[in-house]
Length: 151
Length: 339
Image (cartoon, rainbow over all chains, first blue to last red; front, top):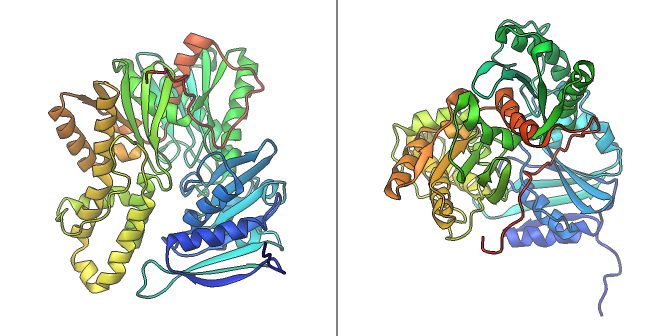
């Protein structure tokens, strides 16, 4: 059996299809555990929800992840005591809208938090978390650049 | 008389109803008599905290009743935002304790379905309900009161969300759905052939993420000037692709489950093409389509109260340890082997 000497913890790659995105999501899922937070950045249609769907599937959720753009938050169960919280702050215009919503309970709790449009709530984010950036590539509608690193 | 309270998302709403009548149905964004103390952010549960008491009071005043006239309470306990749902639930728990009357938790989607039963109206069972809004896209088989089976749902974006996001890509003002509907009326729906996802027979799930991205790619390809020139045609082509899947799958669901009645629920039920197309296709198969009144399609407490009334009639109330569930699913009945 061939094993990688070092587990990969950073990505900066151009993918040419949704399948290639899925491959990265599956690899990345191996690094995540309870209490982690992943902030997703990328324009409308860049594939944030798609990446999260693949990630959740790899983590073993019982239901498929769907977009929480209107509901702001979805929960998915992995096991009896492990939950994923999938946030989407697309509709947020001012961070003040989120005061008293109890976000800290999720962001600093035992949940694995996956956050779309994290740029809209940057001051709520804990200092240490993962960043996933999805970017379009001009004239290649199927391709995306994916950057992942921990801060 | 039942008091209903809904705080699952943006709107704070309270309503007083009986089986035959809606006495009041106050929705925060439409409430005119209530002073919330300046502009409050839309989504904050803090906003719900500030609005809940004036909204309930206005519902009682408009219905011309006192709290002592209320015999039961219904409140949305999911799906939705935890903080927002808790405001409604805890307020209603307080009322239940103070008034010593039963309270019942209602699923928000179930509320949308029961919008069809307000003001003494009803639909013969079984029926198919297409629930279409910003947050939800589901085909539900309703076998009897409070007996549901989810036949299909979206695997990614809700259809209302697709309308809103495409409108944003096109630079149209919020809310995007009605804007696209209006512009599409003057456009050519066959201008661009956008993809219809999962339009395979015998399978009732939806997918709208690919359609959104297809529109985005097309717009980038066309360039800003040509896009502005063909705005009506793009809207019409997108709307046709989005609506066709809804109509075809709903009709097929009704036919394969041998159900004669179809109803719509949720904000997207207002879309004019959806209404027209559903009516036409249903007529071709001798199916009956029922549209709930426009004012009960968007989030409101009257529909929650109406569903709650059915629970109170059949099962009595919930205990005071009732909780909120952000990802609450419709309670589904046990599937028969021949289903």
